[in-house]
Image (tube, rainbow, N blue to C red; front, top):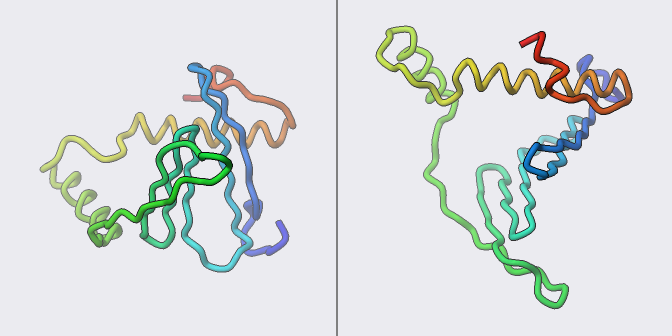
Length: 134
């Protein structure tokens, strides 16, 4: 933790192996200027989200030249207002389903817990090792 702004590490990286053989590499870095970037790379393309702008590259590179990214227009949204409205609808019992339900939230927390334990133990952690906690 170089910045000292929080107790959380400034940078995090994790390699996830899924049962179906897919691997995912996640990285976060909090010691940068204010940026809001999400890049998703796959074998057949990439998705880039930068400050609310979405671009998509689909298709494999040809002769070491990447296929061009095309911009995809998004409707502007107020995500904080959406979250508050969803919360009030849930409290008023006007809505039964949620964008992120309890089970999804617990599963996300289990992944974070596994990443944290892996960091402390400096070894791989299998999700089934955490079943007793969730």
